[in-house]
Length: 325
Ligand SMILES: [Zn+2]
Ligand SMILES: [Zn+2]
Image (cartoon, rainbow, N blue to C red; front, side, top):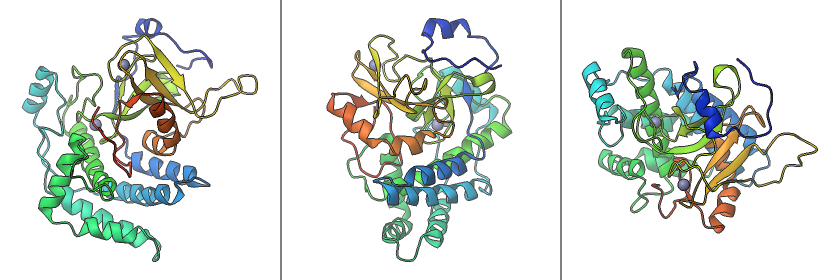
């Protein structure tokens, strides 16, 4: 099913009319999620003020991709646990309740070893990678707890994105392996602002193109990369539908191009929060975490206007006052 190109947003009412149509409300992470992120990071790094950081993260994402394919077996939820989560309207693999298997730490250290092997010998990032690799288990667990709770107090901000990469790898594997082992592991829990698989906040949202998902907007999980549906023109923080506005870095000339900017901030005047929205119609290669990092000046712009972030990008190098929305 394809739609003709459209330059106006569909209203929630119009979209609700399509409810029940045959398209997924939840898209699980595919095996190439990290490879696609790495490609996009390299693309965005060219000529970018954050070039070195984006390239470091590309090396990290390439190592995540390699490890995802060979991740060791870890305990998975039972059908009874899946039923209980569905009954409670809670995410099955919530970071607050699902125990982190110790494998995440050995996989993280292996991941960082691959990153070191692929970084240039004179890269200034090497020392930071080695420092995280050398952290004792207890310190890694403590940092992971803070990261997943969105607490920046006591968080080692330089090491946080690297530790986050290990947690992303672990949870992406957990979600994919659970989907392979159970018939119906994930439902759509009560809280539409959180990932249905792991309960984490979104990094950004994306309006997809192609096939059954064409024109639908999904929130993209900062941790496990699952995508869940949220109608357009709706706040990803308070779920309100009035006072929603869009801001972009560059005004797009409507006469020169019928497209909108690839990345916009969707701001809500009801609760004062915002989340970025990426448009595949404007650039089919947009990737939520990569494009969010490459448009930090847009965060500054809407931050100055008084809006607070509704999402959280785990790969962000520096902390926010209140990372948990
Ligand atoms: Zn998730
Ligand atoms: Zn709101």
